[in-house]
Image 1: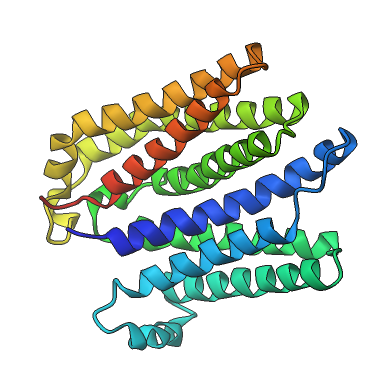
Image 2 (image 1 turned 90 degrees about the horizontal axis):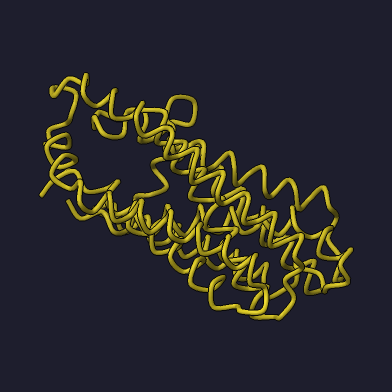
Length: 273
């Protein structure tokens, strides 16, 4: 089953939310270290652009994209409707912040955090769409763990690359982002035995009408590769802390983590061969 529009949407949107949140979390430590503000107009615009591009890509999943607005008619009962509303709220607030950064150069902290909360709520709704579907491989709490984990890993990895490019990566910020990535990777790995146990007892009849369980078992080499890349990326970030004069380890680790997230998301959406 080709789901590249949804793959692009979920990755771009979760990456945008994660990057926004990472900038907020690292803004104070970076400023205290004498670095420039992370919340610049180009950075905020990049988040806005990525989110908007992802939302546009999601409409290509529909048979007739212009009918996307009809999904809003069931807000009280549909997670899809709620997800669209929260995505629109995130983009609207992010656009306001971007405009304020351009016009005034200063954004109220409360507004910045409101954008982050809207994004996190959107990821929650996004996960619920799949968690409460009829595809066996999506019907577990691991879906939320993977989605929120992707936001954290992508956001932190992209911010590390940005700070390295600017030549302004305080050790405290690098250490904090690396610890966050390692923790996220470990937590998601710890959920895998629970997920495997769930799948082993799942009823084949709940999978509409695709052989998701068979496909999942068939693709174990790719899953192993994805998790290996994720673990290798985290390991390279640890090495980069021990060898601060060489940026190669940091860059390689961040890139491996991003590649791993793309591969994991592709595996998530493959439910038919």
